Length: 238
Image (cartoon, rainbow, N blue to C red; front, top):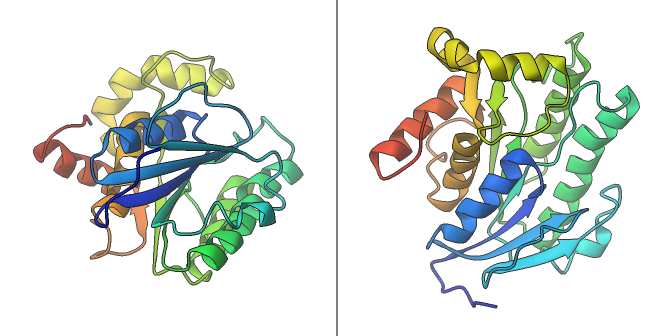
């Protein structure tokens, strides 16, 4: 295992077997400003890297066992989630709210100075009045993170996330959106974001601390603007 230098970041990524989390892991391992990456998930990644420490954790309802693992971290990227319709409403809330809050509790106890980059979603409603469960639950999770005591919380609210690489889509709507993406991207650019670009933006705000001069919420338009800035400074695509 490599030992990070004083100016390198120690990051933890939750959900690295998922679409966005997978790209975040890849970019973190490639980034010279990152000295160590800890991946926490329920399934094995199937990769190895000198920077990477993999921790399997089967139940995010209780993250107490992760206290030592989460000690000394500079930032967390939380990409764990579920698609609406893929699980019951109760499960959706558990995954979206309870797992996030429990992980944040233990992370803050072990690394109170860590930054938190959270994969939320477009329409997230912090007032709790939305009729859409996904929006209410994401808003509830956002509120909890903002109140958790972290010095910096970044809430990413992407609209449609384009998978980039072929995959089995979770439902008909996503299959349709993938087919229509080229036209949709031209007509409604602020309603789409590539999965790799989203991951790069979530990583950038905690590594280069580019998000500290604005508010905590990154809507799809803001994510695209951040990616455009990254492109200008050396890579990425919108």
